[in-house]
Length: 299
Image (cartoon, rainbow, N blue to C red; front, side, top):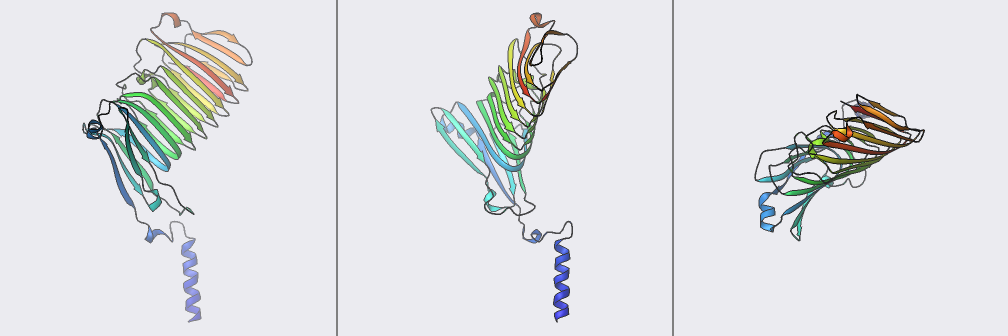
């Protein structure tokens, strides 16, 4: 009997340290919850403006644009820990409807092999919207094309995120503002927002920014403060650009045709495109960089 007990103990020990085997596997249950914000919610509340707020931690997030005209936002959340159960809070104040989608949090010691996935679909609707993201420990793939955005803001920590404005927003976005630490952020077709002001602040961040898109006539302002990593930006050759960079141990490289060097000092550099004054769309960059590489490619 002692030999049998010892043998079984050895087998259990080997299984615990065998790749792909988890002592929690048989006990893991994947739960699913659907959170929905509908047009009727806003209509019944008499709201004319919408604030969408997503506060999500430790998850993968996927946001796509849908065609359902009755749904504003639907989130299908899969999770394997009870405390991660998500919530949707709704309230109305002075004609503004606020919907907050929030993930739960791990309580106590984190178990292995957690499932925490958000699949979000934005419906086809036409209400002025301010959109806010507070994300930590998240991998996200987000499409905001076609939304009726007025303002977009995000606060990020330990995030890898891709944002695409795959089609023009149905409103001019007044402000795109973001801040983060330890972040990789890629943004594509930013010009499809026709933004008035675009601002990013980051430490230990890598930003890949594509400013192409369907701009309307006028000036557009970009402010970026970056410490200790990289900024790679592509800008449209069909617009006029002016770039001012304040830097410390931060090389600046501009590529593409049409750049004119105005000032080139160790801590301050300025470039402008030769067609700046004649272009109907003008992009104005003001960049502060510390120990960061800055590359701006015009094409």
